[in-house]
Amino acid sequence: MEGATSSCIFCQIATKSSSTTLLHSDGKVVAFQDINPSAFRHFLVIPVEHIPTVNDLQKRDEDYSLVNHMLNVGKTLLHQDAPQSKQYRFGFHQPPFNSVDHLHLHCLALPFIPKWKHVKYMSLGHHGFIQAEQLLEKIKPSQAFTP
Image 1 (cartoon, rainbow, N blue to C red):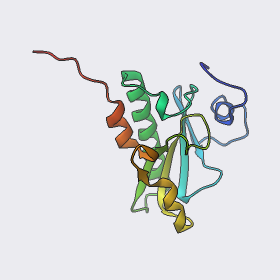
Image 2 (cartoon, rainbow, N blue to C red):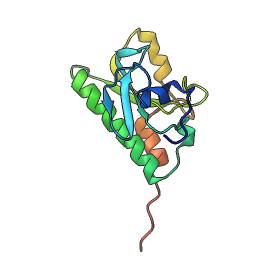
Image 3 (cartoon, rainbow, N blue to C red):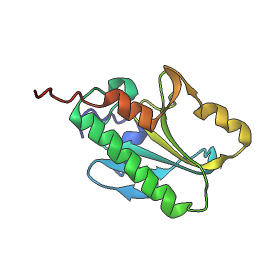
């Protein structure tokens, strides 16, 4: 696994070297429940490859495709597990607000539990939490110009 570190807890989960129960696993990502949930349902989707933070993503097809895949996996899991939720939130904490230096998508089926936890998942411009759709727009590769 490229860039993996033995000290990274998410790398251990991605390589199935921990006892964490996986909700989804494929060649690109794994998903599992957050150990400190902030909402009715709170899942994390992480890439198998060690990518430290959103700041390490670039306007490349492979990065865009990865984040899009992470989002699709998260949406599928929440819609299956919490179809009664009326509101969902998908996004990433940006440095210095990320808790683990391994890219991870927070997938939340609201309401927040307890309610004050919503503060952790508010968009604060260039800092704090960035919605997955905003990140996709930010890293969307430029299309080649064809006259």
